[in-house]
Amino acid sequence: ICSVGVDVVSKDISFLQLGVDSITSIRLAQLLRARGLVVPTHAIMQNPCVGALAQYLRETPSESTAVIAQRDFASTEKQLMRQHSTSIPLLAAGDHITSLFPATPLQTGMLTETISSGGRLYVVPHVLRLQQSLSPPVLRKAIEKAIAKMDVLRCTFHALADGDYPWIVAVHAVAQLRFSERQYNSEEELHAKALDLIQSESLPDERAFECPPMSAHILEAPGLRVLILLMHHRSVYFL
Image 1 (tube, rainbow, N blue to C red):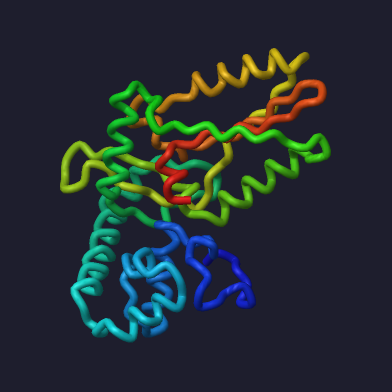
Image 2 (tube, rainbow, N blue to C red):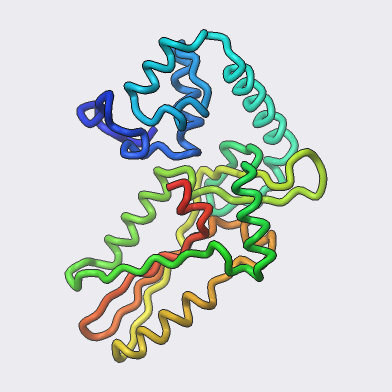
């Protein structure tokens, strides 16, 4: 799931270190259940390493309320896929919806507050100074590779006018990176334009979340190269 070698895994290494987030934990739980281990998704997040999860399995009856809840989740996912998968806008050639599920209360609150704030709240800039030897095409390819591997970076969010869920999450098979490269004549100009770029990024309405809320920008001036990653905190929280 996370392209981690067997030699890296130990009973004490955390799932977060292995690359498991709130999205991939669903797939990991499904894989474990397919192999006969009754593991609800919440157990992976609450037992943060392989050893703790093994202890949980030893102490938990094979049929529990958590397992029942997981079956209910799978049923909800199937129902949402049937009702909404064809209406979700696709992001690129070859894209399709791989999963649909209700947004959590935390996600719902963050999305709603972002829109209420005019699109600025929870939009987080990450600014990194790059070595001059680093190739922008290589960096872009690395970010695109991360997007291809991590479901959370291919998620879009969709508000529903009616029904039981105010927002649903769509996991896409393919998502394109919003990327730009910009050249400036001086560090002072770069600093000013970087501030303009950060201040101009907003997610003002529900439609803004129909694309993954992340973009990458390389700004360059003589002697200075900067990467700015703009991400909604919904993505940062689950990375």
